[in-house]
Image 1 (cartoon, rainbow, N blue to C red):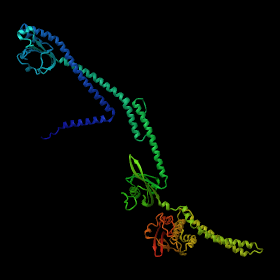
Image 2 (image 1 turned 60 degrees about the vertical axis):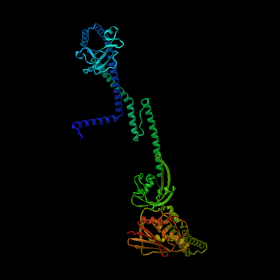
Image 3 (image 1 turned 180 degrees about the horizontal axis):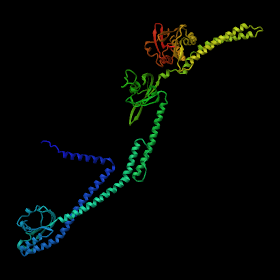
Image 4 (image 1 turned 90 degrees about the horizontal axis):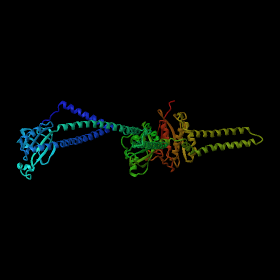
Length: 640
């Protein structure tokens, strides 16, 4: 069958119905009071309608019973008249009674049927002789007892039908037969007009509906006001306070205006808010304390979960990488290695990868990428930590990250430690002039103790004293220059003077180690660079001492300068054991120590040299030659 298309008016009606339904649902679900009003109204209206229907039914039955009781007396009188007419066999009188009965104002029809349910007498003459079934839709199983009920007559009207059987009596047996076989002579039907009864019932129903509606409206208004005042309003206050609490306003409180259940709920809410405020304050303080605690640690600290996400980091970690914002909730490989994927475990040592396998702490040296693109050498100490987060046990790792550039930035104490190794040489340098000064003074005193003093000889001794004191002052000044604090103020540094004076402090140590120092400088050419003098002296000192360590059985140390364009090459060669190939790419790593004399060093000497050279925008490299090792330091020459 073809599908029918709705007309435009039908579509408009459907659209309007959908809009009204949608608006009603929005109104109903918007507030609790709307739901309450709708529910109370529906309950009251439904109960009122049920009560009204029950009332109308009962009232109608009551009216019917009253009419039935009223008509019963009339029926008895009428039945007596009919029986009297039957006994006299006055059929015309009987017809007249039935006819007059049908003419009554409140009676619509009246008729008598015989035991065969054939109409014998009727107010409507056309019914006479017809079976009861032709003019009445109602069927009756038992007509031997009187009864009254509402029925629909043949005209389609609702009537109150009174059925009264006329019983056989001894005086009637002559015409109707024995009572045992013919207990009923006939049945009288009287149809009363039911409209007055129904009209009265309707009027009473409308009155009841009006009064009930008024009662329902008053009940709804009264209950609505009560619920709004004592339930919805306190509930709304609780809702607004809960929203404020959820938004972070921990100072919000609910006024307690009663001692009922809602008042108790308000007090409970206030207690909960105070407890929550105290708990959150304690959590916040603990969090700040924890953050302050890890921020106080000079090494970088970060905590990483099993998804490589950083969940905690301290201020030192951000400073190491030059991060201004927080690094929390970003992957560790993105934060410290500038990668978009986890670091391959085959290329570098990943603490997470190793701890997952062994569940043991691990220490490794690696490089981190700073935000400015520079590489930061670090020492990472990582350890596992088992915690419970969101109800689940998780494995985290805590990394302690030490900035090795800070370690190799030698402090004044480190410099003094290096100077302390020169103590023997410095003592030797000062001891000989002091011994000469003492001998000169003793000779002068001896001459002055004789009667004839030789002034010329005393003058020569004073000249000797002055020269030896100058030597002591010179050694002291060279030592002070070496041990002076490093300054950020860049100055012109004369490399010839720095090399010569630093080498002089190592003469005694070189003699003890049987190392010959050959300094090949051009006296007619002075090379100057931009740096700090103490840094350059420390650079030469560490290179010389590194060469001494490489020649435990003595040897030859050669130092010279070579100018190539705008750069100066400082070459330090020794005839030691050289550097093994597998160590060439590690020799400048912090804490790497592999001395040929078998002494365990700090592993910072060459790292310090590299740091000094890089601060001067230079470069340092090492290579083996046929008789030992050669260090080449390239520094930019000052354009002065």
